[in-house]
Image 1 (cartoon, one colour):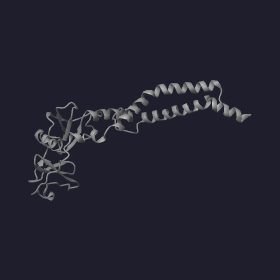
Image 2 (cartoon, rainbow, N blue to C red):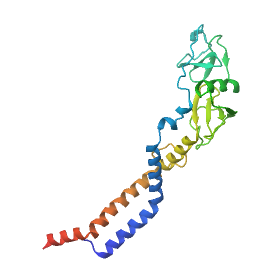
Image 3 (tube, rainbow, N blue to C red):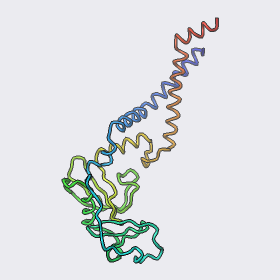
Amino acid sequence: MVNRHTSLKIRKIHRYLGLFLGIQFLMWTISGLYFSWTNIDEIHGDHLKKTEFKPKEFNNLISPSELNISEGIKTIELRDVNNVPHYWVNKKYLYNGLNGNLKESITKEEALYIANNYMKSDLEVASVEQVNQVGKHHEYRGKLLPAYVITYKADENIKAYVSVNDGKFQTVRHQSWRWFDFLWMTHTMDYEGRDNFNTTVLRVFSLLGLITVLSGFLLWYITSPSIRKLVKNKNK
């Protein structure tokens, strides 16, 4: 067995590691509890969307080959912009699907129409604004900009986002999602952008956490009367 001086040194290391890591361990536990006790569909805002929504069907569309695109068509999607079909081509251009005219961007009224296709009809709109840039911690980070944000009159501070260039309904955000996002940041320890699960800080804390747990097991082993008794009897 180790001597008393070594035992005290291990105990001191274990104590200070526990004190240093305690707050982060608490955040991991709280965030883990929140993740496991919440419905991920509600976090995504599915309870705020129309469950019966179906994309509109259009007739008399012009052929995509008639569009004036010199680079050729790599990808194409159909968009419903205020009851008018549009082609979103090569993830860059929005063309009217009836006459082939290029559309530079959608209007606030068109964004509201698109949002109303997805969001429940009993939600009352408070405002419609355009955002051109967002920070790394913004709730709309990582998605297509610029975008219109439609804010609804609700205690949950509900916001729907529709991208300006392609007229696509991007996402919905509400208070429960924001709590989830904050706790996700504390869980991943990505305090710069929130979504990176391979941060150096997380790796360091994970290793220190492992050392703390192992030092606890070691302390139990070298201070346990039962272990001491077994070692003593073995040496006789």
